[in-house]
Image (cartoon, rainbow, N blue to C red; front, side, top):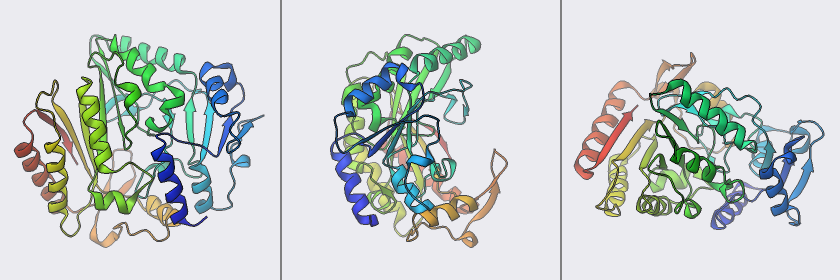
Length: 357
């Protein structure tokens, strides 16, 4: 199926406010858990969804595609239902202390996404049904760090919102953290289906963030995601429900009229902001960067991509994990920092800029 038809199909999924898989792979023993049973019950009579019970956890045998291009597109329509076997949580700097592994993968098709590299030939969405074990492990980390506050990130390798209607993992996590004085939960999304979260008891212990960018960047590179207006509308809903809210502006691109477009984006956000924010709104700002491996993989998946990835226009820099990446030159990073610092300071009164990198 050509790329345009895929994008149209995913826009239909978004209008239905959840991820509708073409196939669901149930890992061996996953159906012992209530979440897996509920997912099976929801989809078993849907003739458009193929149900596959895996005798062994070999996914690739059941996801069509002979090359990365086709594997990516079929993987984006595949849901794997399994358990999180390793309960050693990964660190999550600078966003949090630990990842909370509820979901991996995302239905979105953002061309620049680091998951294109991290998930490789397994770009499917995977939900972990042993939610009780995951939250019990989180409790252990909280106790180990007591009396310090421990922060958990729920979207480090995923966007959990599109699968929330049938996993309820975010609901479970929000309620869990609502009663923990020394713990906080946060996650970020590019989607707007947040209504099921609005009436939950959260006690301000969960921060819901929205990844935003200019409409031109969203339209050009963030395929199968909600529009900027829908993301901002959803952020206002969760703010009115008493949640702390935040915005991840990422990745920031430098292009013709970039300052004007990011200014307009921030103005549009400010104009819809409530005047009685209970908590300071947080901002996290990340400039565009890429690795050579990521660049090569992106061009296999999106051969017509217009992402600005000219190595000669970038600076090569080693990151915290030991591999090198191409970032904007220092003068460009300084310009980004100055621009967003001044704009946010001018437009928002009750705010906190966590970092600009």
